[in-house]
Length: 76
Length: 156
Image (cartoon, rainbow over all chains, first blue to last red; front, side):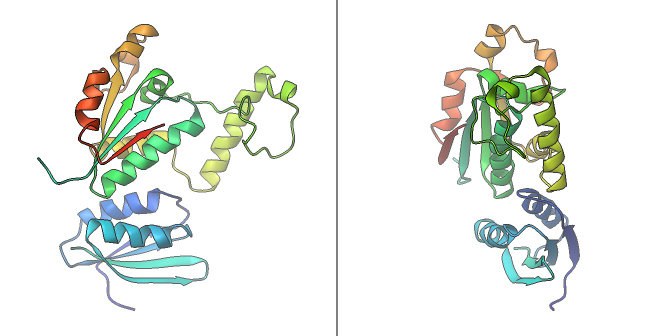
C-alpha cells in the first residue's frame, strides 16, 4: 500500500458524511499530500470516484476488504 | 462572473424525512465546489428553526416502510406520530445517517446561503427570533437573482 499523510476513519457513517468529512480533511493537508479514508458505506465507492473527478483531486487507490472500503486521495 | 457551478434549491417541506434532500444535496454540492443557495418557503421554513422538532408520519404516505402493518385508522392515533418519529430517528442513528442539525451545520459551515421566504414568515406570523441567525430574508425575485444564473435548480 502507498504511503499517506493523514487518515480519516469514516466507518459507520452514511452518505453524504464520508464525502463531507473527506472534504474537511483535505482542507487540512498540503497539495500533493495523500489522504487515506476508511469507510463502510458501499455507496462510497462510486461517490469517492465522482468526488475526485469533480474536485480535481486524484483517487489513487480504491480497495475493499473485510466489509470495509479504503481510498487514497491525493490533493491537487 | 465566477466559473463556479451553481445549485439553487427550493425547500417547501417541513417533515423529518423531507428535510434530508435539501441539506444532503446542498452540503454535498458545496463539498464539490458548487456555490449553493436554498430558498425556504411555506413548510420548509420549519427547517430553519433554532430548535428543530421535525416529525415523520405514515399518514398520506403509503410508501413509508413500516416494521409491521398498521391499519390507517390506527396510524391516526395521537401517539403514533411521536412513536414513528422516535423509531425513524433511532434507525437513522443506527445506520450512521446524519441528523438534520448536523447536516444543517455542515451546510452553514460550507457557506451554503439560506434564504427564508419573507411572505411565509408574515403569513404564519413567525418570529424571526425562532430562526437560526445565519439566514437572510427575501422573496421570489431574490430567489431568481441566484436561480437565473444556476446550473441546477431543484424544487423539493
